[in-house]
Image (tube, rainbow, N blue to C red; front, side, top):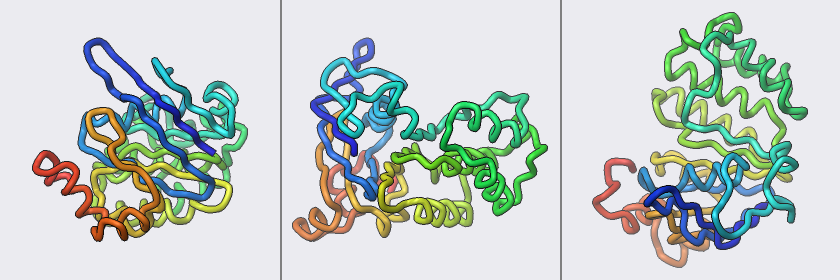
Length: 235
């Protein structure tokens, strides 16, 4: 489904992603791991078609990422990207206008499960509530590739558990998912593919079971081994 070949992205004085190469197949859930500044968000933005690489190529179903791939790729950033004057109901309508695969009934169902009032203004939402609305909007799409940037940040333990269940519910054949997170231990049970990034480079990538078996370590232990003292608190 997704093929990334020697991709590099530079900003002024900084190489955010350097010579990244990876493959992601249908039905796989990939954990994109690494401390802040490792290049995870930049990589996802390039896959989403929001920024262009300076070198290399990104292919979705064999076609360069662009206007066509955006129809099938969903990217949920860490930032709040809704207008403050919107209501929660407006968020659903906004998405429905842009994406043919967006389901208003599915969006409303998830809002109901989280007890989120549709008339509530975006500007009045707490960070935890905003996280729930963003997830509802992302999973109301039937995207073939869904990317979630730090979906477990800024929410309490119970909300994290619900988010993890939601991720599990929305994975499956014909669809793939990339989840970026610092909370490695909470993601570990559901991961199929591991992608470790450091200083813009992919330092380890592949099937989770194979890597963990060959190295005799859990994902958390691998994280500590790769990043050492620089990111112990993130695990």
